[in-house]
Length: 298
Image (cartoon, rainbow, N blue to C red; front, top):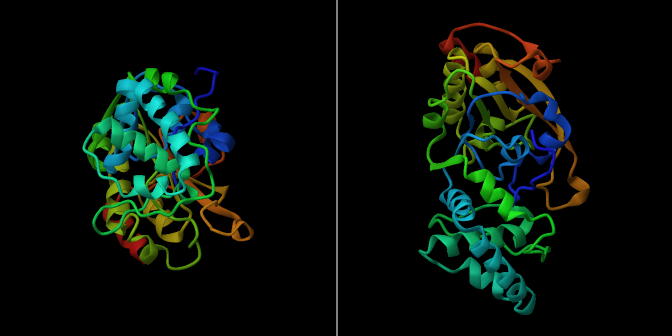
């Protein structure tokens, strides 16, 4: 794996920079194709830097941004330099861009990256009409010292980018491939209300669909690393499918108040890894998918 670091160009709520920084040893170092069905900020992809990858997301703005960088990173970089000046000179520039509608994919991509870097906490949220509606944040850096769009574009040349549902991507994984699945979820409701709260992020039916798809992939010999909330319903779901699990501590940065930000536990689910990446995981095994579903609903 290359030693020079590539920093993700998007800051994504629930992103896995903390995971890469603290728990990179839980990731395998050898695999065939890398598949990530919930791309977002792509922290694990940029850490592993695979030569062959299938990257997907259900968010068209995310995929448009990656495709644009892959296609013409220089144009994206020039656009961000222009937006940096405009952002500093015009206090209303953020809201003008937020309300702008453009069909040009390169302009859409640059706008998305600009909004992501200057909105509140990097949150991505749209209204019922599909319009981005996050208020302006306190950060003014549009162009960052860590930007290396040339290196990102070079890495993306070996990746297929796809706007797609996660299940179709997981189902494409072949023996020896690595699937890293990081579905949308919150870690702020570990003790109560998890399933009800998360219906607006990633429904329980989606959780079941993902777990079962990962189970099928595991049985085909695919290497699996998946993160999720460390909640009883999630643990029961994956325990019933015989996955290896381990709780991980992370720092939640979503809260508006720094005083209310604290560590929360998340869960890493793994299968078919070598002994080094699987050390310390709790393993339970049954084979009944129906039993997993019924137990998880309780």
